[in-house]
Image (cartoon, rainbow over all chains, first blue to last red; front, side, top):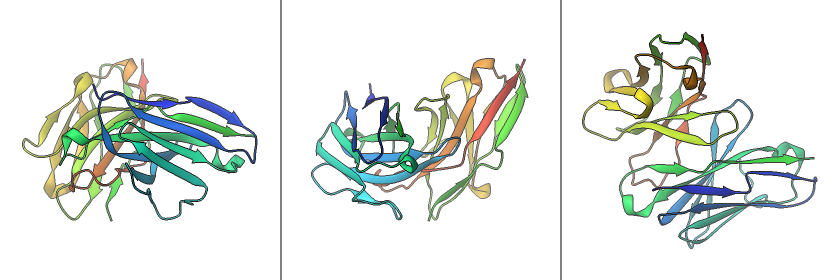
Length: 118
Length: 115
C-alpha cells in the first residue's frame, strides 16, 4: 500500500518549452501533496504544498508563475515547469499525505523525475 | 522555523562494523522525525519514523533510531552494516499539525562502505 508514482521518470526538453510532471497516489486518497526539488548531491527543498481543489501554497523564493501546480483530484497533482531554462534542471520529487491517516504527518514519496533542460 | 542538521557530510564504515548517523533538529514543539534513504537517482525510502511513545524506534533493514528530547537529536544506528547500505541518508522533521506542512530535510549524509 501507499504507493506514489511519478511520470515521466526522466525528461529532456529544449529551453523555452514547458514540461508537465504528474504525481499520482495509486492506492490511497491524498488531500495534500507536496513538491520538492533536489539539486545534485544536495538535500530536498520543499517548493510547494498542493491541496486538492484549492490553490497551491508556495515556499518563499519559488515562482508560482513558473512552477504551476494543479491538484484536480484526490489522486493526482501536476507540476508544470513553464518556459524552462537550464537552471531549472533538477530532480523533482513529489510526496502525498494519506487522507486516511489524519493527524499524522507521514508522507509517501514518489520515485522522482529527472528534468534536463538543454 | 524548524531546521535539521546532519553534521557529517560523508561517513566511511567497514562492512560489518556498526554505524551511527547523527541528526539534530530545531523545533519549538515535539516534532515528527523521519529517516529516509536514497540510492543514486532514486526516490526516498522511509527507514523509520518517530511520532510519540517509545523513544527507541525500530525500522526496516535493521536500522533503529533514538529520540532524545534533551539533546534535540534523532540519531540513526545499525549494529552491522552491509555493502548494500551504501547510499545517501536524510533526516527530516515535520510539524505536528496534522500533516499540513511539508518536511524539512537535513543536507544528508553520504555513507560509504569499505570492503
